[in-house]
Length: 155
Picture 1 (cartoon, rainbow, N blue to C red):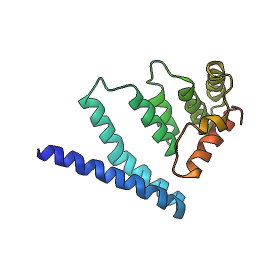
Picture 2: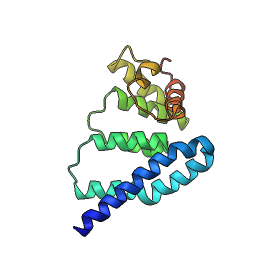
Picture 3: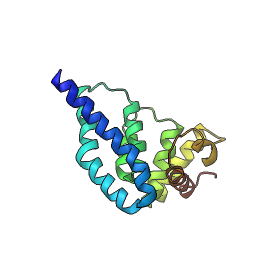
Picture 4: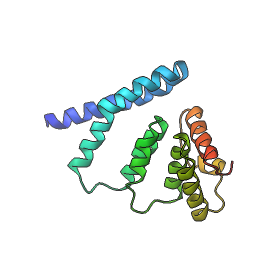
């Protein structure tokens, strides 16, 4: 029972941090990103790794959720590593891989993933894709849009 209480408290702390994150981003984006990176490296990433070790047969979508969070945190190489663990990536995963590659300045990889997005979803546009995502902060959606456009995907 005590271990269960510890897990609940940890989940509540992470949820509280995420809620505060949006407010802090409005006030001090650069400082918040630096602090969030520290929190992610010291608390969140180890917690996700621990959960994945506890259940080595976790659903593959965990990699997608982790990759999206890492992209939002501007940890592009980490996002690419997470999305790359998907055994059957769909067009959305390739979109984030394209955006991540573009943000890292790897035009070759960005173009390859952008081509894959359009092959799987010929009517893809950044606008329609963003309509499927839910971001509290418009700046987070804009960040994804910029990466997609930088990768050469249609606006």
